[in-house]
Length: 63
Image (tube, rainbow, N blue to C red; front, side, top):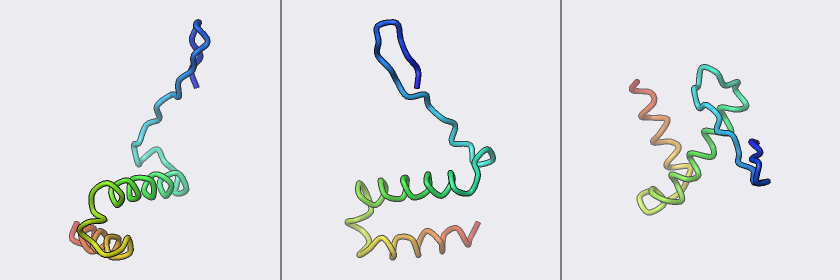
């Protein structure tokens, strides 16, 4: 957190560089991003988060 002279505070942004993350931190980020994408975009396209995850894993297999 960053404190300001007027007493307000803000959270300090963290890097999302995967090379700097440990496995636990990456897992938390992945799950948070997955949840946002599911809730805001793809819940209308797929029948369940599991189906979406299977598609993601399939696409990652092509890389």
